[in-house]
Picture 1 (cartoon, rainbow, N blue to C red):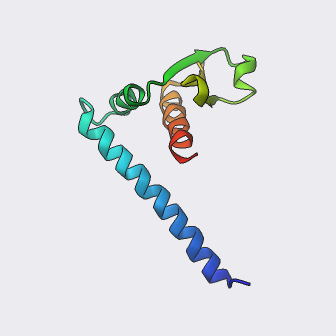
Picture 2: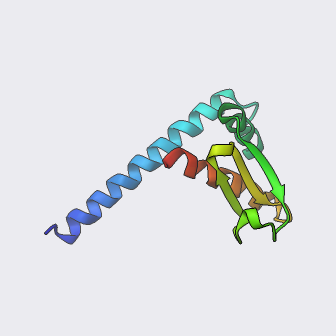
Length: 102
């Protein structure tokens, strides 16, 4: 049985790998974006992945109660269109995180 310290070290290494992958993709997007804004980076991500961001009513069944949903097979990110624009950018980026990690 692994000691708690060994488990913690393994978990931390796993998260460091994820953070490194995120930094690499961020740098790649930055190299192609017109500026460092979230909208510019997300625009490049949309172009590279060919995903579309689609706003839906908050009660739309496709959202299943969530604020945003990734639909990989349809190359879509669905989101609650009544959400604050800053949150929409966060949801957009968050869903790309799911795409990149899974």
